[in-house]
Image: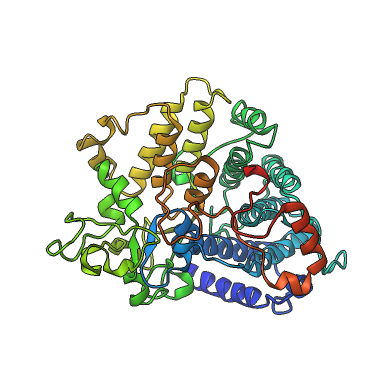
Length: 490
C-alpha cells in the first residue's frame, strides 16, 4: 500500500513540478494540481518532493562537486565551477504546493498541518536563500492572494529571521495543539508530532549557526533552546533523522545513483575525489570501504598504486589520471542500488546536530550542563560510523585512539570530521567550507577561480519576466556571479 501511495504522490508531484513556467503567476496557479486536496495528502507530496530533490542535489549536482566529494571525468562543468545561471522553478513549485497545504489546513482548522507547512516552508526557503542569497520571499506565492506576479527580492538578512520565526511557531503549534497527523500520509515521521518538533528545532540550530557571524541573537537563541529541552526537543539519535527511505521499483522512488536513475556511463564517469580518499586513507577510516570502490587494477598505476585512488578535481584530462580509469576509484557499489538502510533522502540528521553543538560549545558561545564540545564531536563521529555500519570496526581498529581523531579543540579538525560525516547529506560540505574555509581544498588548475563558488547565479528567466526587481536586487546584493558573498558570509 505504501508503495502505491508514494508512487501516486510522486506522480502528482511531477504534475506540480511540470507546471513550472516562466513566471510566478503560473507557478502559483499550478493548473495541473487540484485546488482542494486534503492537507495530509499535500503533506506527503511536499515532503517527498523536497527530500528527493534535496538528496539529488547532494549526490550528483553542483553542491556535491563544490563539496569536493566527487570528481567528474566526462562532463566536468560542475568540477570546473563554470556553472552559469541556475533555475529555481522547481523549488518555487514545491513551495506553491506547500502553500496550498497551508491554506487547506488553515481553512479546516488543522493546526498540525499548519505547523508542518511552516517547517517545510522554512526548509525550502532556507535552502533557496542559502543557494542564491537575496530571493523573492515576502511577495512570492502571492499571485492569487495579492495579485503579485513580479515579486521583489528580499534581502537575506530579513529572510533569515522570518524563517527562524516559522520554525519557532511550528514547534509551538505542535507543542500546544498536536492534533492527529495521518500516519499513513506522513512518509517522514509516521504521524509523530514530537519528531516533527525535533526536525523544526534541528533546522533552527542549523540556520542559527549558519548566520551566527551576522545574526546578533544567534547564540542567545540557541542557548534559550538548550536551556529548555522539554519546550525545544532535539534529535537524540540516528532514529530521529529527518530522512525518507527509498522504496525503489521506479526511478522516481529510487536513490539518485541507482541504475534506474543514472545510466552506467554516468556512474562510471563519477569518481571519488582525491580530497575524500586521501582524508579517509590518512585516518584509516572504515567508511572508506563503504563509500569508495577499489581500483580495478593496481598494476600499471602511474601516480598512486594504492587500493583506493581518488582523482584530483579540475585537472587536464582527468580520465588519464594515474594511468587511466581502471586505476581510479568510483563510488562504492552501494550507491548503485535503488534503496537501502544507508540510502535515504536526508534533510537533516542527528549527526549534523552533534557537530553544530560541538562547534558552538568549542567557540564558547553556549553551555550545556554536563556536556563538552568533545562529547558532541565524538557523538557526531560515532553516529556517522553507526549509520554506515562500521562503529564496531572503528573501535576494534583503534580509530578513536589516533592523534588525528582524538578531539583537539581546533575548528579544522571538527569541520573536517563533519565534512566526512556529511557526505551526500544536503549541501553541508559545501556550505561549511565556504563559511569556515575547512577542510582545505586543492581547487585544481582548470577551475574558474582558486576558490569554491559562494552561490548560484539567478535564473536567466528573471531578466525576461522580473527584470526590474532583478536589477534592483543586484544593485543591493552585488554582482550576479558565483563569487559574490551573501549577507551571512560577509
